Length: 235
Image (cartoon, rainbow, N blue to C red; front, side):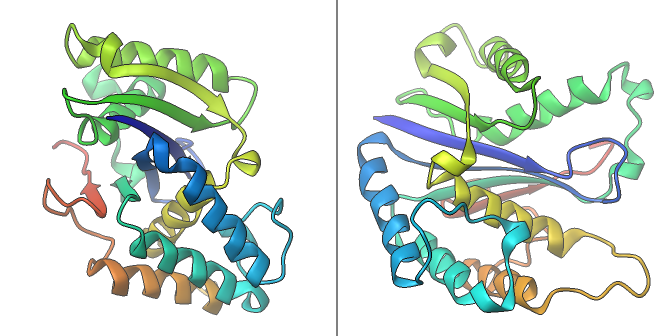
């Protein structure tokens, strides 16, 4: 079977305003991709927005919360859609010098920890990562190198392709953005006086309800719908 994997990350910089960081991926059989993207466009249409509008975590508002709930329900209702995420709950505890590595090297290790649970030696994969900046293509090249060196001698057969794409041009990538945004929101420690978004919290609560998970802890390794690793420094 040939699968497509769509990857994204949030709050991944070493020094930013967030204590938490999340890497995530949604994957599906490649032959189902056309049908899945069609369903997402239909969700937009029945919620009276343009099919070309990009759905993002940062765009969630009270006026559009039903649109995002519709997308979350679709993810959980479609048997062919799966999510894998790695949660780093506290970046302040990272000690890169102790392990003789840079933040970038650690980042690629975390990316592989996310992907390796998805890979099966019996299947093949095309991996797509969201373009963040001008260095995204180099990051994709480095990630493929890390994956191929880490798997086995058959890794080149396992990974058919690894390249960058624009999330606003690929419907399914927008599911990744929403789920990792919700997980990160649930794990962030906000400053005193910060007023949380009720609409975003509704999406968080819906994902928790549909998945049956708190979004804080590691799930069973063979969990297929929402598979999570809560990674802690030193483990």
